[in-house]
Amino acid sequence: MTTMPIIRPTLPALETILTMMHDGWETGIVTVGPVVRSLEEQACRVTGARYAIALSSCTAGLMLVPQALGLRPGTEVIVPSFTFAATAQALLWNRLVPVFCDCLPGTCTLDPADVERNITPNTGAICGVSVYGLPPDVDALLEIGRRRGIPVYFDSAQGLGATYKGQPLGQFGVCEVFSLSPTKVVTAIEAGILTTNDAGIAERIRSMRDYGKDPVKGEEMVHLGLSARMSELHASVGLLGLQRVHDLVKARTERIAVYRDRLGSLPGCWVQEFPYDRSTSGNYFVLFIGEQAKRSRDQVYEDLKKAGIQTKRYFYPPVHAQAIFQKYPMKLSAQLTQTKKASQEGLALPLYSHMTDQEIDAVCAEVKQLLA
Image (cartoon, rainbow, N blue to C red; front, side, top):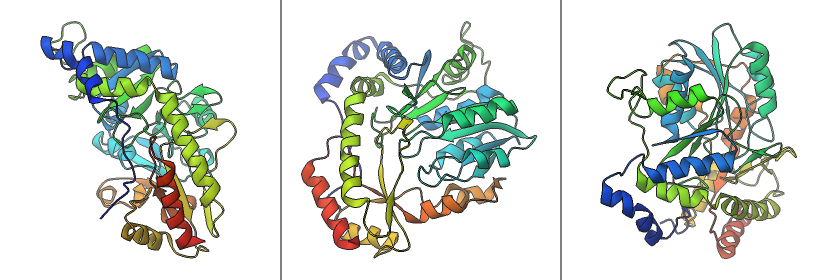
């Protein structure tokens, strides 16, 4: 039986949520109401983006972006294979062709050189991903997009609160999409936020989250949309978390520093590199357990499970190797070496903003016993 889960969402007091929900509950305005608008305004303040659109999930946002960009079925979109499956599943829903590229050693983020190698006349977009909360090489990806005339957007699901060259994520590329699921630094229980500086993209996404309704007439559908609205309940939880995002990120990164100090130099192991020009949100701490380690990653995974410590092989398997993607058209880079290595070695350990010193001590003791 698990005694220590891999995540525990840091939630506000229930009484505070009930107070925020009161007016909407009494008036019946329980979705896309004043709390949702307050969440969107706070998201703009936190990210520096001009526009923020609250959504029912990050995946919904990722599904709507290709529609907002006008990508036609059969168009190729470059994505990393070392990511969560939703990055590419959103492309399949749009009948697009994912082109899976390699990640960089060290940061595990999308390799710009491999992106360049895999661009074809049919490339419609490039999607960069924040890995465990660490942004990719944003400038390199944007430069490729600018030079090739290809839009670049970002799956920043795990990146809320991270920075790139001193600027918060949320204002880069065509748009960025964040997750507020229970596994994220800021949670709304289930929800997402799309941020952009493009007024046209913002207008389309705002319509598309509500079935694609005409923003003026309302009755007529002018875009292919979804029911992807955010409720006032979810917005209340998310807003309270977003108001203290910097504290939550600080708490996570402090705990990651302890993990890195105690476990990063274990024989045969390594940890994600943090380049000087960016900071992580601290969404996950992952220990990579290489072939030279005392035990394999999978053995450590099983042994920690027996000890009551939940971990996750993350990201495993790599997206291009997962069953669903074998049923749809896709393209693979000739170089997925780093993706396969990271996928075979990565093990996410328990991490949450209110994790105690005693809990970290217990995890480190078990891991050291297995690998020291």
